[in-house]
Length: 240
Image (cartoon, rainbow, N blue to C red; front, side, top):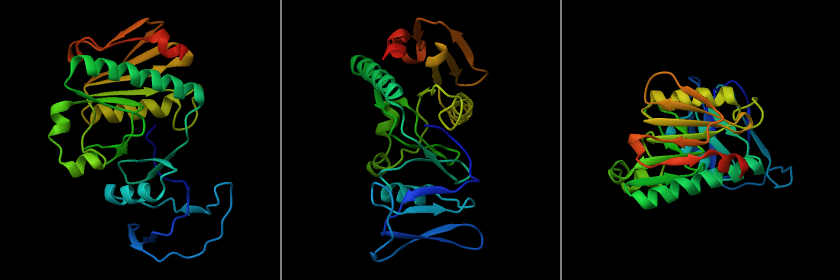
């Protein structure tokens, strides 16, 4: 997943539960509408719905959009603009699964942590809603949330965030976009960030503050004192 800005139209499958209305100030409201026949196209039988580039959503409105477009992968930038994310390729998906498994094994052994995968969104302090490829949240922070907050986009920045770059440097999964996303995590309170670059066999380590460090041909990635005992055998991730 990756952060991005507005300025482009966004297609979604049309659903009948809500009607998007844009007022003169460019603020969207969502109003229930009755079901009605719509023209359809595409293999899924859904008509594309194009949203105006000036559209801005609140996190609450974003949650409604996600609920009505469960087939779409979306994020919300801090300025309220929607970011459409395409599904990962199979190779990246396999790496992501291996990564999540290693984090889960560590968390189960050590206790005190919740592990989240790439489909989990977090409502960051700057107003954005982002989904790291994998993340860790301290259990006491998670337990401090209400049941309603846990069901939605948890209002916090994960302690550890991990992003996997795609083979291409283009689009929201490219290295340039992911570096902007890592910077957002850092500015919103992440204690540690890992940007994994499989094609380059490299890792960028983003601390809680300061400049990231790049490590080439690293075999063992260790999280340090903040996440005692957490380490990744990178060759296992690259080969997944």
